[in-house]
Length: 337
Image (cartoon, rainbow, N blue to C red; front, side):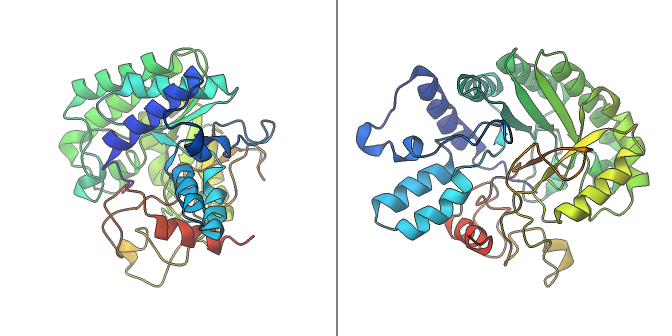
């Protein structure tokens, strides 16, 4: 449901941009520095995560500014100037993880990485796919770990992977392997010097924390730093804190992080329930990323899902993961200011 289509091209371009930043140069000359020169990091004390100055939103700001669409540029700047998750693609995990973490480290920040490549991912829906098998997945995780090395990183691990073990979406033949792979990933990533790992735990729409707590434990939550909720979804921060707090009490008091990227107006309820998560109308940007949250159990509000990227080919949207400037503008405008 999250959108990895196009990850190969998007991640490669982003990593190239990150590499150029580390080298202290630009590939596009002084005239086209708008995408980077005007996109700055947020104050580190409240938001220690890296803002990618060459992301889709930053490029859109530059494109709008170049064409004289200053109002649109300022709206998209609401997205471009905040850190969002960097979703590691399937083919070059070491190079991508290295590029993002090196650029973040040079800026004195922490890279926010999202790993979404578990075999049999998304149960055949818009973001179906994932690694071909367990050995391929373990090799991919190894590549990510080698790329991160000793640099600071926060990893959101496998959105929906545990939830789909609970809701019956993942076939029984694949469940034991999935538990083993999640344990492997957590153990490998936590062996790194400065990496925090948050295993995904669904969202407030899943009203049965008792049913997911034991699967989280089987998946290795005890070794992780905590869990993530509301990734790529729209439930309010208040509802997400309530859900996360109930779940935390069932998994040893683990802390959690909340994806607030598009939850400013809460979930969409007027459409077909099974499709309300996919490019819903009338949504807005949520609380901006920060480690200064409303609850001591919440380590951060994050923009894990990159606002403006499609959920899938629904409601007129492009393929999952593709940049959709029309939707990005609507999210930004609905957030006010």
